[in-house]
Image 1 (cartoon, helix red, strand yellow):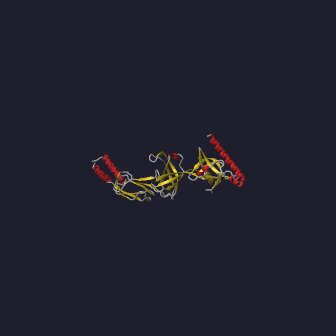
Image 2 (image 1 turned 60 degrees about the vertical axis):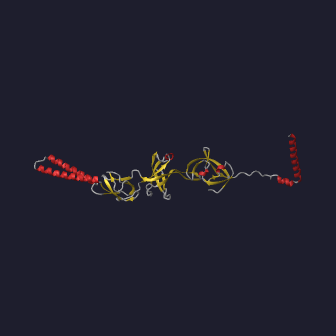
Image 3 (image 1 turned 45 degrees about the vertical axis):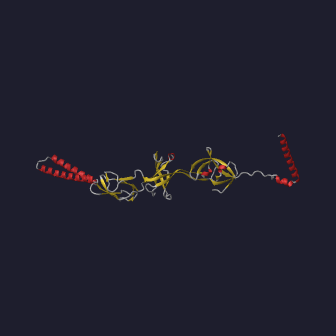
Length: 361
């Protein structure tokens, strides 16, 4: 084994000597075999895309879905103070109505009609009794106390008839809209017997509508009454209306697991009852230095942004404030509007690395 190694070493040395002797006689081949003078490894240049930092007003928003409904306390329920039978319903749910427009027609039920007839008969009997007592009084056959009692009976009977008449138990009655509005609900149908005071239908005054949005409980704590809201019908996103948060719910809906946010639309908003809408709530707004979200990278518990200065990447540790889909607020002493922030290729950068920036976005 030792002899074999000695033989191999001898062959290698001999080959090296032969090559050296050959290059001495053929210097041109030796020049070709040698590496060019000054040829060091080329520096790495990172290709990136950039966008300018800007000083603008940034708005942080929250998007929620909901429906259009009647504003609390703004509905009017129609009823009649006697048991009635529905003769006809003159409107349909969701219909716009004018003031004094007929809504529904009713008449006294058979029992209410019977009560009215009995009251009239009792009045006639009381009057006849009073006349008889007065005649007996003239013949000294009745006392003044008996006459007084007979008169009181007539007054009571008259009061009962008058009360029934004032409640409308005297023929058909037409229920009319008090103010312009929308028919939000109809509770009866023709031929139905409705008890005294039972709901017939419900209307909402013109413009007295509300939007109920649902937000996650973690987002609800950030909202306050008075915040601006952009409202868009789901089936017509081109139609946009403004509004403001009127009231915040203080409970989680057990079915949706969301917190209700009640929004009052601006005057003139054309929304339909029970319509599905989306609402964009302006949570916060301020003027600040902003960058595209892609420019900010997480690095442990910090956030990092790279700018391009004289063909090299410069690392900045930034604090992030408000953010939305297109912008993020930055806070850093070394940054200013107009600097070019790296928005693509920044995940491979290091501080001071040579970069070649593509067209600004």
